[in-house]
Structures are given as structure tokens and as C-alpha cells.
Image (cartoon, rainbow, N blue to C red; front, top):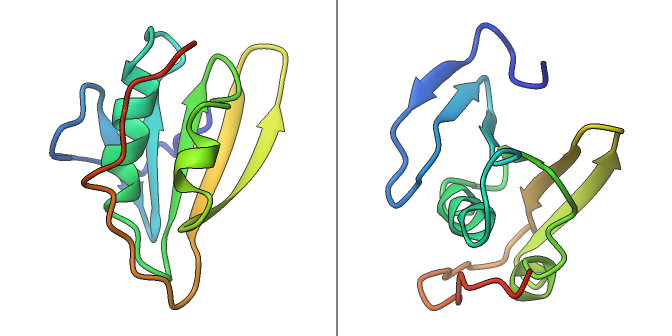
Length: 108
């Protein structure tokens, strides 16, 4: 399991799945959801980040529609396995983020 067993469930505004926090890392799993939930939850989770925290997304495929929308504000690393994709996001240093106007619609 990607989400540590010691992680605590937290409430995240506008999310549709459970979010967890362990140390300075937030986690969520949208591997069993359909469009547009992965995008909606990723944007909700990205709003939590500061320069010292990370967000881990577990999904069924690489969220290619998300990357162009957030790449000015966040770095990301993608790890693929047979069953899922793990994307780890981190906030770029000294960048002010405003995700309120990001379109969370996804074309697939």
C-alpha cells in the first residue's frame, strides 16, 4: 500500500475521496474513480501544499490533462506500476499559486 498505515485521514475542501497526511506528505487515491474526479481531487490536494510538503496521487493512469494546468506552479514525478500510477507533486520554490481558476474538467 502506498498510503502509510500511520497516516491520519484529513478533511480537504472540495475533495470527493479520502485524503491522508503523514509527516509532511498528503496522500489520496483516485485509482477507482472516473473523470473528472482525479483532476478535481488533485487540484484540491495541491491547494494544501507549501514549499515543505508533498502530495502523492494514486491513479489508474497518468493524468496528462492535469500537468499543463499546474506545471508553472508544481513539479511532479511519475512512477508507473502494473496496477496504478503514483504521481508525487511538490510546490516550486518562491512561486505564488492560485488554483482557484484552474479548470478541473478533463478530456480523458
